[in-house]
Length: 67
Image (tube, rainbow, N blue to C red; front, side):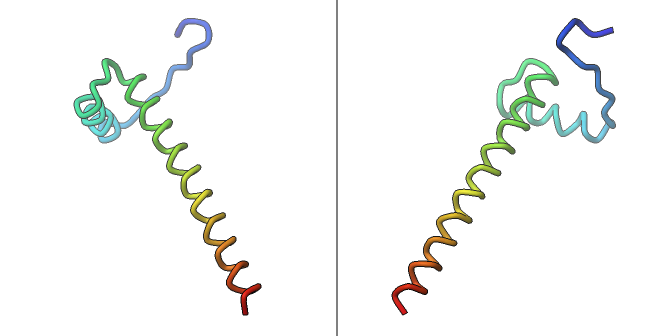
């Protein structure tokens, strides 16, 4: 049973291999740190995508107004 505030997960061997690569590349000391790194990176990329989409939408609106 995990400590309070933590959850146990089961992952496939191939996913464990990917996490091991993340651990090695980004100096993570555990699978938990590697998972946190991967999740944080994904969330940042999603936020950046949203910002890019917003900028693109605004650019399109400006072009429509200029026409």
